[in-house]
Image (cartoon, rainbow, N blue to C red):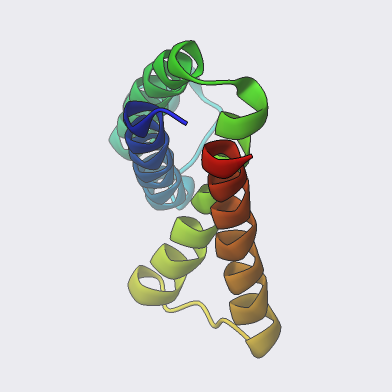
Length: 117
C-alpha cells in the first residue's frame, strides 16, 4: 500500500476525531433555532474538521484500494475513545481497552496484508 495513503488516512482519523471533539463541546449549547445553530462555533469548527477529513479520505482513496484504505477509519474509534478518556474524563473499562487493542491489531493486519499479500 502507498505510504502516502496510509499517512492521509491517519490524518483523516485525526481530523475526524477533532471534529467529534468540537461536536461534543458544541452539544452542550445545541439548539435547533437557526440563529443559535449558526453561532454555535464549536459545531461550525467541527464541521470544518469533518470537511478537511473528507478531502483527505477522498485523496487517500485515489492513492490506494478501497478495501485497504477503508479499515483505517476504525482508528477513529481509538482516537475518540482516548480523547473521551483524557479530555472529557469518561471511563474506559477493560473491555473498551481490549476493543481498542483489537481495532489496532485489525488495522495493522489489513495494512500488513496489503503490503505482503
